[in-house]
Image (tube, rainbow, N blue to C red; front, side, top):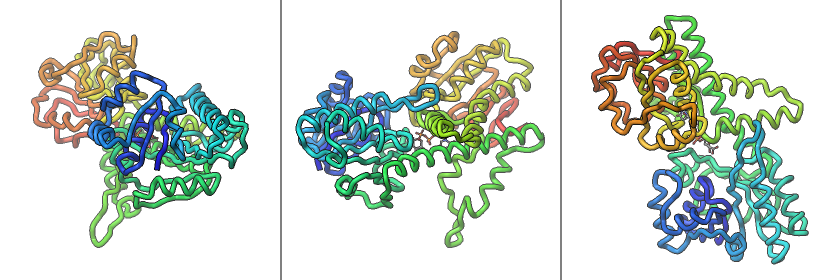
Length: 445
Ligand code: UGA
């Protein structure tokens, strides 16, 4: 099949390249001419494991190209996937780019009179495709649906594992408003053999949000229990969670073997969730509910707990170290999670700012995210010393904060940490596996 993908950002690029790898002909469209040129030369502008190799492969096969001309990309396409950004504005979703690209697609449909199915992949609040997108296209084209097709095909891609998630999905959701779009979606994903869910577009939209909201809820729930365990004293919440995880409903026993589902990783205490998805999506859903007159108590709670969680790190350090003034602190991990250089809503932004505000002398390291971090933290990060070789500085450090679960920090268990305080904010280590002066964490007193 020939298709266009509007938006060569993280979602559009990964989707386009993976669809091309499965044999489709994909024309990606992006407004940024530098990005267009870079991608056509085989260099991704985002960091994603396996992407450079796959991009080179599909470019060489002649099945993938990038252009800034939407019209030419649509020319031979039966279907266009919208994968433009949906930023957050005052907690609500900002549909500016969705509107704009829908209008441009509508212009094309109006001019050519060709049938085209428009499938939204961007994360949009329930009801967006069959109201906003539909209206923009109808207005610009002068045609009423179903003179064009409408669909919604949410992505479930984790940053850092996006290629793997696209190629081996748990399920694919075909949100559709007309039979032709469903047919095209079936054809598009024919190479994938997995569960396929066929629903209307607003159900597809809510599946995506519900998925992220429930994962975020697990994280905040376990963090609240961790804070309670710490307040009670004499409890390590990891022991609590180990006991909880053994419930067969979390870890089913099949054929005498206990499974360890990935979901359990979201039931580990820490300094909160971040990234470009969980915080923004939970907020957008909360705001949509409130706009409909609902209290959205649960999602408000999830956000509240998460907002306060990074602050636990400095609060505990202040208490346990008798203040932070002039203490030499090394923060390990600046990305919101390992495997990415993304620092959006990273807990480290707050942790570093709090440490500096407390008077600490802060050094920081991340294998790939330091540059992005420095830019994102701005003036609140003035004074941070970014290190390339953190181990070389370790002897002078008094406090080490492990803020991201990068595997390379596992080496701490082999290093001399005598007299040092280690704050393991992600529970990378068991409480007895470090030979340090003091081991601190969330949910442990
Ligand atoms: C998340 C979802 O997992 C994807 O399914 C979804 O498609 C994506 O949002 C999106 O909406 O586009 P992502 O934000 O890349 O993907 O990251 P996750 O790996 O789920 O991490 C989100 C947060 O959960 C992070 O703060 C991370 O520290 C935390 N997390 C992650 C855990 O607590 N445990 C884990 O095992 C993984």
